[in-house]
Each structure stands twice: as C-alpha cells, then as structure tokens.
Image (tube, rainbow, N blue to C red; front, side, top):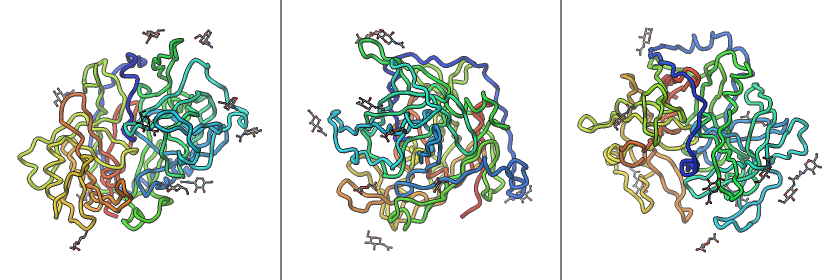
Length: 424
Ligand SMILES: *[C@@H]1O[C@H](CO)[C@@H](O)[C@H](O)[C@H]1NC(C)=O
Ligand SMILES: *[C@@H]1O[C@H](CO)[C@@H](O)[C@H](O)[C@H]1NC(C)=O
Ligand SMILES: *[C@@H]1O[C@H](CO)[C@@H](O)[C@H](O)[C@H]1NC(C)=O
Ligand SMILES: *[C@@H]1O[C@H](CO)[C@@H](O)[C@H](O)[C@H]1NC(C)=O
Ligand SMILES: *[C@@H]1O[C@H](CO)[C@@H](O)[C@H](O)[C@H]1NC(C)=O
Ligand SMILES: *[C@@H]1O[C@H](CO)[C@@H](O)[C@H](O)[C@H]1NC(C)=O
Ligand SMILES: *[C@@H]1O[C@H](CO)[C@@H](O)[C@H](O)[C@H]1NC(C)=O
Ligand SMILES: *[C@@H]1O[C@H](CO)[C@@H](O)[C@H](O)[C@H]1NC(C)=O
Ligand SMILES: *[C@@H]1O[C@H](CO)[C@@H](O)[C@H](O)[C@H]1NC(C)=O
Ligand SMILES: *[C@@H]1O[C@H](CO)[C@@H](O)[C@H](O)[C@H]1NC(C)=O
C-alpha cells in the first residue's frame, strides 16, 4: 500500500523463521460458479464478508474488531501489520510539529486500550513504525489483543497503535490490515541510542493457522470496479467486493484459472528460487503483457506483486511507455512522472499472461478519475511506470488488475490461484 518504505532494510538483517521450501504445484483448476457455490464451506456466512470502497474507490475496507472495538481498515495484501489509530494520538506535520488531529483525516473509531479487558501492552522497548513513500509515517506503542476478522478470532495478536502520526487519511479508515508475510512486519527493538532493529512477529493470518482457526489455510478476495460517477462523487461506496477465509468468494467466474507459486527472495530482495529463499509479498512471475504491438517488446517479469492496497498497476518502464501511447488520444506524462489521459479517452486492450493463462483487464479499469494538486479533475492511466526492469525493483498489479480476477492466496503452500471473473 502507498509504496511503503521498508525502513528495516537500512537498519537490520532480516531474520525470518526458517521453513522448508515446499515445491509448489502448478495446475489449472477450472472453477465454475455453480461449483464454487456448491462448496459446503461457502454456506458458513461467517467466513465471507463484504468490503467497502473508500477514498473515491481507491481503497477497500474491511471491518475488524480489536479487543471488541470495531474498526474499518484498509485491506492490504502488500503489507503485514494490523495497525489502528490510538485514542491518544497526535497528528504531526512532516517536521514532527503537532497539528490539529483532524489534519490526519482518520475515521471516527480510535483504539482505547483502557476500554479493552483483553489488552496487554508489549515491552516499552519496542515500537511500531511504518513509513510510506508519500512521506507519511506512523509510530507508537505495540500491544496484544483479540483480533477478529470475518468471523475468525485470534487471541494475543500483536498489533500497532500509532500515536505519532503524519498521515492524510480519507475520514473513514482507521487503520490498515496487512496480509503479507511476517518478514514485512513493522515492530522494532529500540536501542538505548534510539536505533531501531526489526523484530518480526507472526501476523494475523499466520496466527489463525497456528491457532487452528481455519479449516483451509487460504483467503480469497474479489474487488469490484465502481462506476466513474461513483468514483468522482462519492468517497464511500458500500459493498464493493468480498473477502473470505478458507473458501472462495461468491462472484461469477470464467474458465481461465491458474495456480502459480509465490516467488521468494534472496539477499537484496532479488527474486530467488533457492531452497532458503525468503517470502515477503505475494509476488508472481509474469510471462508477458499483451496489447497491440507488444509482440516486439520484452514484457516478462519475475518480481510483480499482487497488492490490494495499490490502486494502480506499476509495470516496467518500457511496457508502460508502449501501452500508454496506445490510448486515443495518447496518455502523457505529467510533471510528477504519472501518465494522465483524457477522461473520455479510449483505452487499449491489455492482458496479463501468467503461466500461459491470459487474464484480460476491462478497458474501463484503465482510466482512473482523480484530482491534481490544485483540485482540478484529472484522469490517470491505470497502468503506470514502475521503473526500469532491474533486479531488486518490484512491480505491482493493483486494483486495476484485481477488479478482473478472483485471487485465492495460499501463503502456507506458497501458491496463489487467479481466476478470471465473468464480465460485469
Ligand atoms: C462494518 O460494520 C458497520 C457497523 O456494524 C456496518 O454498518 C458496516 O456495514 C460494516 N461494513 C461491512 C463492509 O461489512
Ligand atoms: C496519553 O498520552 C499522554 C502524553 O503522551 C500520556 O501522558 C498518557 O499517559 C497517555 N494515556 C494513555 C491512556 O495512553
Ligand atoms: C519543515 O522544515 C523544512 C526545513 O526546515 C521547511 O522547509 C518546511 O516548510 C517545513 N514543513 C512544514 C510542513 O512545516
Ligand atoms: C478510554 O476508556 C476508559 C475506560 O472505559 C475511559 O475512562 C476513557 O475515558 C477512555 N478514553 C478515551 C480517550 O476515550
Ligand atoms: C475529510 O473531512 C474534512 C472536513 O470535513 C474535509 O475538509 C476533507 O476534504 C475530507 N477529506 C476527504 C478525503 O474526504
Ligand atoms: C528497556 O531498556 C532499558 C534501557 O534501554 C533497560 O534498562 C530495560 O531493562 C528495558 N526494559 C525491558 C522490559 O526490556
Ligand atoms: C546504537 O546502538 C546499537 C546497538 O545497541 C549499535 O549497533 C548502533 O551502531 C548504535 N548507533 C549509533 C548511531 O550509535
Ligand atoms: C469452459 O469449460 C467448460 C467445461 O470444461 C466448456 O464446456 C466450455 O466450453 C468452456 N468455456 C470456454 C469459454 O472456454
Ligand atoms: C528474475 O529475472 C531476472 C531478469 O530480470 C533474472 O536475472 C533472474 O535470474 C530471475 N530470477 C529468477 C529466480 O527467476
Ligand atoms: C473529450 O473531452 C475533451 C475535453 O477534456 C473534449 O475537448 C473532447 O471533445 C472530448 N471528446 C469526445 C470524443 O467526446
């Protein structure tokens, strides 16, 4: 989400609990809606919940309770922590000067540890700290409490309760719920001189597996596309997707489906197939991107993350340049190196090929309504420049892609299943 800057890269080596590498199986599993709906677990209403759209449909929210207190938080497969705003928080500017709390634009609920009978504070010598590429940062205490998501309850879950926050929220969301691997968690040991060393912990999903709370160790997500009118006029859009533990989500799908391994990493965050590879994000290998003229372009990548917390796709520079030239009229780069398009432009066709299976993106997802720095309406291309294709640079398939597939994450087996959705 929001291109988190992984501070621990600068401060510490990563110490992930070693696990045997499981050779992932690759298979094509045609899954029809009738089959999906017939699945016995689908009848358990607790495990399937709605997502809401927020921030003009650039974010997807899920309800969670922490120590019995309800929060609407951003669903983020691109990070690993749960954090919720502290009832005792200060909002600060970029220079750590306190500004009015409204400046942070959090939703109304705040975590009050005194009001939870199950809350336990962590050692005062650890801190939660996350920083985003936008310059936003959040810092504060760490605690343990009972966390419930989609009817699944985990006790003693470590989480962040930031109280020193430089943030620009949406007036609705009150935190973030991360679903990625333990290696991306943001709790640090604080040395006497103030230096921070990452102290990875087990996040919610992995604890749910350890505590035997899930019959199947997987979760599935579908994110709906909103109408352009809704995107432009209404910051909140209820029921804009589904989240499910251990079963699929109730949306019609087509035959195109593929199960692929999650890509691991070696030193320096370079993709690695070695047996001691470590796992951080939901990274997959892309065979190619298909659009008119793409035949003559190298579009393969082994470092592309599926990220529900990222509204747009970010692909290698040469792919972005060739694709964005095909809008009618063509997209242009603005002063912030973002591709902008006429809101009434015609978007080119675009498909993502994963292990030979082609997943098409609806052209409506490729034009995103937004505002520029002066508050004027502007439309962005859904597929932006993610930088050069060099080892260590990762790319993103965000909501623009995820509107078109059902994604089933199986972090324990280290596989993901993508299934093309029926057009909607
Ligand atoms: C979250 O909970 C609130 C309060 O119960 C409810 O109004 C809202 O619809 C819920 N949102 C979702 C996505 O279930
Ligand atoms: C709230 O913050 C203030 C100042 O940072 C501190 O003195 C106080 O103990 C805190 N209260 C709680 C309940 O955390
Ligand atoms: C923060 O400090 C820098 C340099 O001291 C200054 O240029 C900038 O305007 C300050 N920003 C805010 C938000 O006060
Ligand atoms: C937190 O909860 C305690 C106990 O219920 C209450 O006394 C206190 O006023 C609450 N603090 C805030 C900031 O809501
Ligand atoms: C949040 O609310 C404030 C005050 O009502 C408003 O100025 C601001 O534009 C809102 N922000 C968003 C993202 O809706
Ligand atoms: C915290 O750190 C201080 C000094 O940095 C040390 O004296 C104290 O024992 C530590 N407390 C815990 C609970 O680790
Ligand atoms: C701070 O202390 C840690 C160990 O306690 C040490 O590794 C680090 O180099 C120190 N940093 C500075 C800036 O002194
Ligand atoms: C999907 O699969 C079914 C059963 O295997 C087959 O009958 C149907 O033709 C397929 N549809 C498409 C569009 O390939
Ligand atoms: C990933 O792709 C790069 C080229 O971009 C290549 O050098 C590297 O060997 C690949 N790694 C794996 C594990 O496939
Ligand atoms: C598209 O919008 C632009 C203004 O942004 C306008 O000049 C142009 O005529 C529109 N084109 C079509 C085909 O509606």
